[in-house]
Length: 337
Image 1 (tube, rainbow, N blue to C red):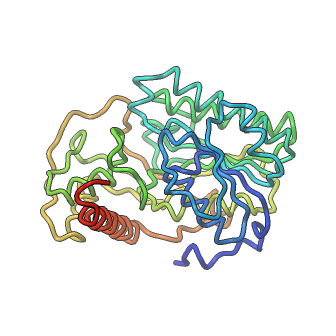
Image 2: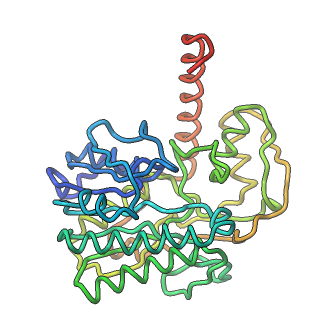
């Protein structure tokens, strides 16, 4: 298995100006850091509602605000060769609670990004689509040809975004691609969020000596995918010489892992008791999920650059380092920050 830093993507990004919407967030910030390493001129548009300025690479330029601000978006995308559209409401439960806000951000926002990219002459737009599009489809692993099965406003909004990208490609000759992410995890994922992803929430609980809580019975399965893989996929898609025109492509590891097994693995790495408590399953959650990544292999030359075990270790090491930094900072500052 290769590593992310072994790839230079044919020098595509050297000197290129790129825009990352939501670039202060979990996935967007990893993407920005790698693009900066590849000598791209990185711009970030983010209102910091779900991300943190500290996540942004020092060499990147932050334009603080919303993708719903058309004037700011136009300034952000000016002169950009590539747009990586990561900004969104990303929580299934929050989308169930606030469906209209979800549609505004994820559908209207995506349309605004596409229109700004078209006017600016951007070469290609990469869209953060979601495996939530597959819902409870029993045919696993999920293939891009499977019909959508939306169980939440979030899922519906992401499918709508895919259709917008296809439409802009067909009507305006805009090169676009939708990458359906499967349960991405890794460093910088915020465990303090009310809607924290399961691995970051488990990590936070175990480190604090709390019993981790599983929503449901723990037999649910997911294609847990380290964030390095989704960064790699985005850069492969942007640098591809293929005429991408609204193509939808799964990005995952091609594996299924039970939540109970995730906890067990984390307990082994941390050498702690990882026995969970259980609560009712959440509305909008799907039971099983895994990716068929054969299309990603064929169209992008994609192979995972990090497996699940490596990703868990990297995530836990980062979380431990963060807690150490906070502890040292509190000690130095007399208990305040």
